[in-house]
Length: 278
Image 1: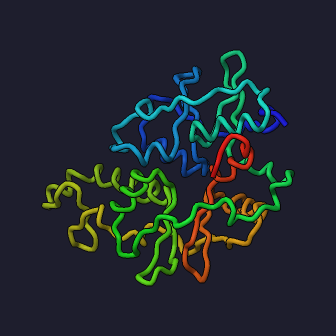
Image 2: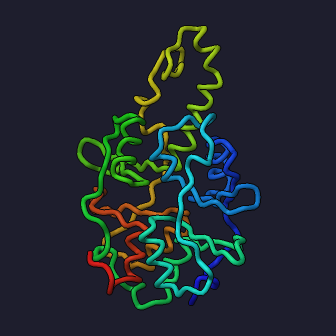
Image 3: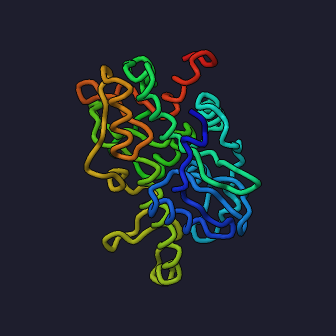
């Protein structure tokens, strides 16, 4: 199988002149993890949810042009192992397929790892490839702490645990983008009126009380349902869950305690067993 066989024309796109808030809106609307950036009709690069999290930004003011990443370009003839290697080394969710300087589609990391279902590796145990001892965050932590952990550790999902270490929920980049950064934009738009009322910069008016957005409880960002896996599940089972719920990582639990995490990057390694060590 080659890159052209894996290519999709269903991808998010945005002009480099647009605001970051428009980009966030596009991610929410399309449920995509990355977008192709254009300057008019000219390809410029890509940007992603991860880039947003790693950048100090004002969603209403910063332009997409400040968030462009350069990634390898595909010609469509690369075999799947090479595509997997390029996705892994570039640490990206998508790679553009370009013909005659025109983007004809992208190869998405999810479509690549789903090909494992047709390979002998699909029967492998998740316990053999998962990352042990995942980074977790306490249920009483604020949004600001979660964002700092995501930036520092370069991760996209953090398990939330109680004082006994039991898994309560997860917070993801998507949660942060949808609720936090767009909330900051709304706060900025209301800034003049709030300032007139005496609310400080960096705070929001919650129930008539001034409150720092960064200290707002992390549990307020999460959904009620957490999708998890077991260490004795197969690669194929985990892929089915990722595909069904449109997620790129899965927390592995034992007795309701997170013991590991498996990401699409972990799954990419199965294409490169001769090149990488665990």
